[in-house]
Length: 310
Image 1 (cartoon, rainbow, N blue to C red):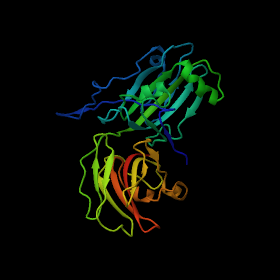
Image 2 (cartoon, rainbow, N blue to C red):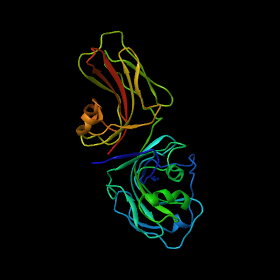
Image 3 (cartoon, one colour):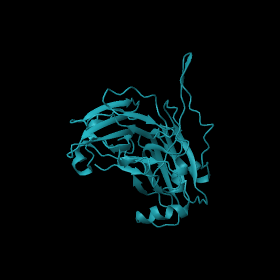
Image 4 (cartoon, rainbow, N blue to C red):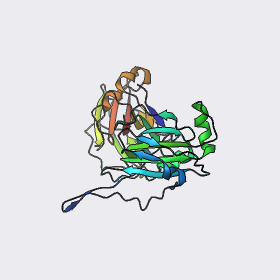
């Protein structure tokens, strides 16, 4: 089953509010310090969307509305999350893309209409389609958003789908989870024999190896407990990974290249991600330290930050 991670090339996102019950108040979503790059406009405002994030949308796109600039409108928001997507955030989404001229769907996530994400979007400046990246800023889990993309940016997607270019593409995006990659929760203590792990303000980890022989069996310890969904064997996991060998030489560092898909357990032989099984059962948002022996007699140490799963 295919999963996609989009470095903001074809996807979107959204927002939400808390609710008040009796005499107590749930935490309220506050986006006042996060300025969206796109605003409401004639096309995004006139698209009619029935249903909330996680349900099958019924969409009506008006005819004859032309735009010069891309636009964003929040169609609905629900839930109690207070997390707002900022630069560098990874969003778990489902979406539908519609040709505004014909009303035909030109792309739809495999699990659109459910709360299980099919696609992932990284908010990174300078990457992907600017209108989509901008449309995702300052959104939150539970949002359903309408993004109307101006014709020039829409042309490539329309041509790829076999449609006639010249009009706009309208995206309906359900934001199911947001993970701001720079956030670091309070870490726990690692067991004796594990390396010391530190984190910069950006969230990027550092590893200090212990003065002892390399382990002869795989050892795993959770340094930070996440609060997201629990990873299953069938989930595609998106993560940041830092791996060094027992001499301290860096072998892999996605903090310099961007989050990577680690696949599911069935894909381990093809992906080469030997530690994928160790992530099953952990929660999204967790940071885990994995020591693995190698054929050379040495070992590698990987610090894995689980950003999303679906």
